[in-house]
Image 1: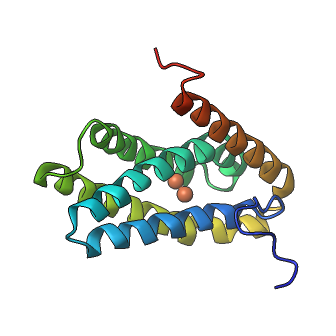
Image 2 (image 1 turned 90 degrees about the vertical axis):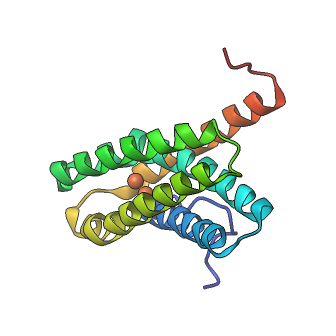
Amino acid sequence: MATDKAAGAFPVDQPVKALIRDHDMVRALADRYLASDNPEVRKQAGTQILQSLHMHSRLEESIFYPAVRSIDASLISHFEQDHLKVDDLVATLEGMSLDDSHSDTLMRELISAVTAHIQEEENQLFPRIEGSGIDMTPVGLQMQSFEANLVHTQAQISDGSIRRR
Ligand SMILES: [Fe+2]
Ligand SMILES: [Fe+2]
């Protein structure tokens, strides 16, 4: 469509679209990881999976889930539990070199937990948002600024202007 925003721009009026775009990216990285037996390719795809998940989960927990909790509170708490499990695996994998069979086993476990989780979000939650009466534009604006802040902070951490303590 001619009105589509440039790639990379946050679709403020359709925040769910932004979440699906993240999901698609994680699925593509997961496919790349699983399809390759080249250790360098796997290491790169694995690192990108960990980074994207971190950003995506914080965005959902901080802005998106609270905004849509009224649709189905128990489904949202189920998703929050999924995130805890995923966070555990991400934290463990972040401390590993991603080039041995132990990290490969954990990465496969992570990929299968994450793909099941994002499928559930897409099947059980996203289709119910439209009929819920929730105005998603303010939610999209909050998500956009949250994401921009997180990107900015991470850039400062990696260039050393903010130090981890
Ligand atoms: Fe999620
Ligand atoms: Fe998600």
